[in-house]
Amino acid sequence: MGHVEKWQLALDMIDETRSWGVDVPLAVADGGYGDTAAFRLGLEERGPHYVVGGSTTLTAHPHDATPHTPPHSGRGRRPRPAYPEAAKSVKELVIADGRQMARPVQWREGSRPGSGRSGFRRMYPRFVALRIRPAGREIRKATRGPEPPACRLLAEWPATEPEPVQFRLSDLPDDTPLTTLVRPAKPRRRIEHDYREMKQALGLTHFEGRTFNGWHHHVTLVSAAHAFCTLQRLARTPKETAPARPSTRSSATLRLVSERVS
Image (cartoon, rainbow, N blue to C red; front, side, top):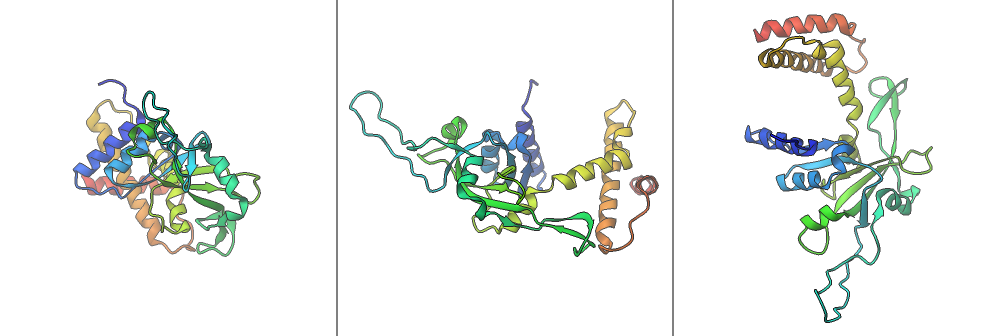
């Protein structure tokens, strides 16, 4: 088997998961995947909605822009419909829409004491949501008809910044509330925290065996231990006292899970 792009491996994993009868309602990815039009088109073909990151190199047309067909000169091929203006970067589109369109959305609580549910300060980043039509050669080749498919552009624009700082694309329905759109767009901090906990506290990187079966058994135990810790955390009331130190808790959890799996 030759080299396979990461975005194609991700699509293959979705296909395999669905072959097991597991539904994948929403795919979330960072800009390394979201910048690839083939990945987004692959998700649209498979059915799950997506919220993916994007960089300022992404270009698009406004949702209400209309392509026009130039008159035929009588020679050669008939001209194809085209937009009268060149596509703009997603940053330019958001800035053109204006800072006043940004709306504060609370999606998590910080680390300082405050009035939040867990006793910490609530955080209200500002976001702008626009309807756009992504541009690019891959989109034009894969699209049937003169207009590329529309999606939503979600841009984070902090009040202290002169321009937007992060961008995401989503094909969630138009009536999806901004709060609902932001929530799956901001899980990176939670994912990185969970991954760090699995590596450092639960021993994901401590495997020193040389067989696939051993590695598979180790990863299974770590995943089960992490699921157990997550369920325990969710069962606690927000303002309860913090749990025991990770090193002590993780050792006991691994022993408990190992005994149950065995």
